[in-house]
Length: 257
Image (tube, rainbow, N blue to C red; front, side):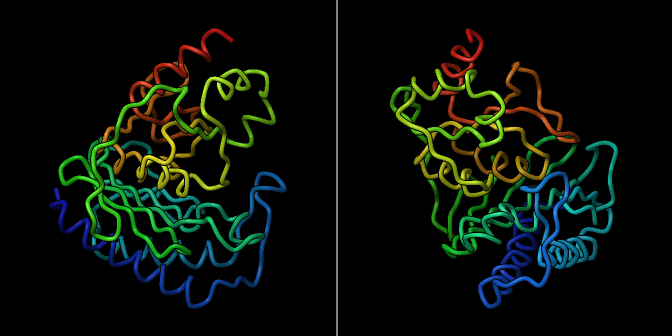
């Protein structure tokens, strides 16, 4: 297996290039819908993903790549080295409000999180790390997180879940210190990593989850499906992400609804 420092250096190099592109020219020429009116893709999503995938293919020719816009190599399993690429996470924010969007690359080895990086474009911050090296933001080490109870923390529940299953999650929100919604998994993960929030529930695609979980496991963040089964990184799943105490208490609340 390629050593983690080589992986880190190459992932951060390509994300720096993405950052320069999006900060220099944050505009787009075309926008289309995918699965529904709120699921958008721009020409910049496609252009950036193609460039990231081409770079990773050059540097890691034997690796597999799973990517949001489909320019990876569509592996059927997670054996070996696997990269998860989300070129612009929070495309609706990118299009409508021009902030709170991210670029993410997660790296797994034989199905286990190895390394992740999240670029918060507008804030000019790159979060990165893994269990063997710790977690960092702009080269500053992030400490291990505290483990507060649910009633002391802010949480995020995805907008889709709140709209489709409001009654199920109202009690959970009421048990917490409050609800925050951002429209970008990457941005929410940055808040989890800094201890601004401690719980996140949503239906995640693999590329939504891979980078943040790889970084977060180094400082006390873990994830499980809502029915407490192992996560399958080949498909979408309803997942709860957070620190130990808040996660367990949230699962207890949801199980009684």
